[in-house]
Structure formats: structure tokens, C-alpha cells
Length: 143
Image 1 (cartoon, rainbow, N blue to C red):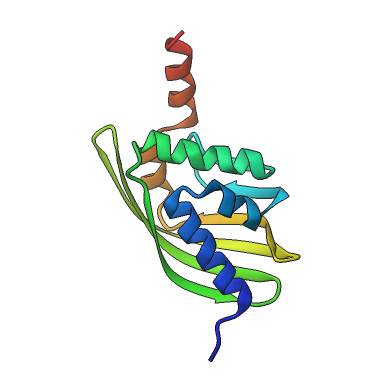
Image 2 (image 1 turned 120 degrees about the vertical axis):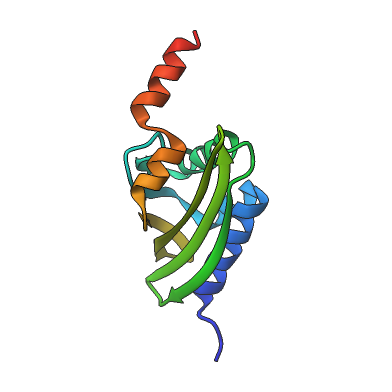
């Protein structure tokens, strides 16, 4: 049985993310897309627009010293949505990340317009990435 075209498209997106391929991600993500990130850490909340989403991805790589890895485990797709399950690992400031997430993609005209990330363990993500308040305090103290 052939894979749904949206599933193949999202698989390519995961490959682009893992390779740091901004051009590939730019083709996949609509200019007006929104990504919703769970938890209470520096990346939580809504990231509006392709540029803001790509900037967040760059910060994920930077904050993890390039150690953040995502391994796609499952993909379910239809004409309007793609649901994936992925495993993420990384290291940051002596802390280890080892969590699973679901990511729901809403599709329009062969592009992603909405991404909703759902963490299996939000507390583990918050501990790894640090709270938004901690990050804000660190930035203010760097002046």
C-alpha cells in the first residue's frame, strides 16, 4: 500500500529538520503557519509565522549545543492532517533529554499551516529547557 503524499512530505520535513535544512523546511511550512509548543519553558507557547518557527528551531539547536535529535517513530496521514510520534534526545548544561511527543500537522495546499506539539512528559521538557522565567533572568543578567 502506497504511503499518503502528506506522510511522505512530513517525513521529508523531519529529514530537513534533522539536517538543519532551512530551505527544505521553508518549502514545507506556510508563511502564516503557527506552531504551538507545550509546557512552561522558554519555547512554550505559540510561534507565529514561518520565520518565527524557523528561528525557534535554530534556538533549539543552539540551546542544546547541536545535540538535539528527533527520531520519527510513527506517521498517520490523510488529506488534511498528519499525526506523528517522535522520540527526542539531547544534552544541555549537564541535563539529558529523552522524551516522546506527538506532533499534529494541519495541511493546506501541500504546506503545513498549523503544528501542535504534544509532550508525553511536559515536566521533563521543562526541566531540560529551563523555565521561561529562568531564561529571561539569565538574559537580563548577561548585559
